Image (cartoon, rainbow, N blue to C red):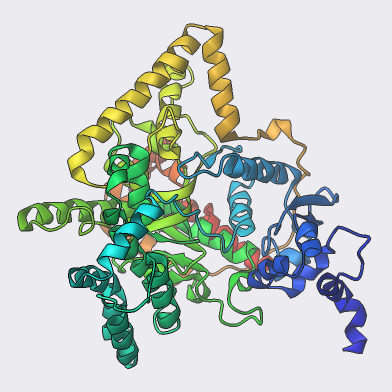
Length: 611
């Protein structure tokens, strides 16, 4: 230990607070700590907490040290290859992160707009920027919705109900999630549960449980350790349901959007998970960026290099710690339950899974109508049963491209989350030479505000009950009408008020850099030749397509998507013309191979070989 005294002195200084004259924390201490340890530091003392309001980031590519909000960006660009190459965030990425932190924390009230559009130009590292934002809030849960009932009124009713045997049924209903878990997963805990249920069942002849809170605290303390936290959360939701029923005076609140949304989200499982929804062709790109640039063990239960499961889940593949690259995506692989998803920091889901989940929801709704089951819960996807900490939609301009919202867009808009981000280098799309380009761009922006839940030009989510669909459509129309009156029409008519309001909204939600606005370092080219063997799965895809596709353009596009060709390339007219010209003879093979050699998947193999 003495021989390592110099190496460990920053860590000892942090814990002992010896160097009281320096309010900054030596950044080298983070190399010794997991993310769990990092958050625990703040409870050591007031001086430590004050010192940790800002932490030093000393890996910026411009060589300057910057103070950033606690806890910085743990694990980002800290893989062995990144450290070896001196990797770090660029100045423009730190500027974007500062703006994104402000956008998420300007207003922290329930239902407030927390998020925006990350619109940095292509090639400026939006993926790494977003991963750094995720790392900066790892472990945080969404803020619990405000209590929408009067606790004094509830406790008055509780005094009456606690001596009424009829209320026993409500108590047992609240305990049902715990009983169900024990019956299936932990039979040894049944005796403890039975004792708790008998003790907690009214009528109470003594002074036990003078308030609802006392009953909830008793059950939680007794069953903690016997059932997981997710089951305790389900128990708490049941308690919320009968508490709301005890307060008759606040029922009017359920008739307005905020009240409905509070009730909905209080019945969801709160998770510290970030849901990233990506085009299918970009699933490999995201997984590869995480694997290459995020030190996963920082967010795991240990920092010894083992047990890195439970940090990143790739839908259709599995845990990233056991995934093989290139990915072998299996769209038929069942989706995890909401309880399993809630245990991850990041969940990567392709658009195809969203389509499938939406189809299943519609089918179950039809069955529910026939069978008379509960529409509000029976048809929900696991994705709809969680209250996510943050939802990120890559290539999110697709949410605003279509005037008539697609089923996928509606499903994504229904997801509950405290924070929401759209990622796109081209937030508005279309022909710039078209006379109605500006008008269409404004319409697209307003539809993105629906997803972001802008308080005036977007829409809060009241739930997924199809019986209120017409009301939701009416609210969409009201939001669109307000946008047209306040922004679109005045802006197109060159009225100053339209320009000012549009600028204010963009300033509120848009984070954007252009390449010409920043001084990026010139690229460094490494010379050298390496031998790369084309993966067998890629060879099979190319050979099978050559033999079976014939002149079917769609079959070639599908094969290219499976090979990892970018979504923007797949929809280009240039590629379609090339396919039509080369659909004969050996040119088919050359075309598929050349497209694969231009993918991020192949480039990652080259980079790995050269490292």
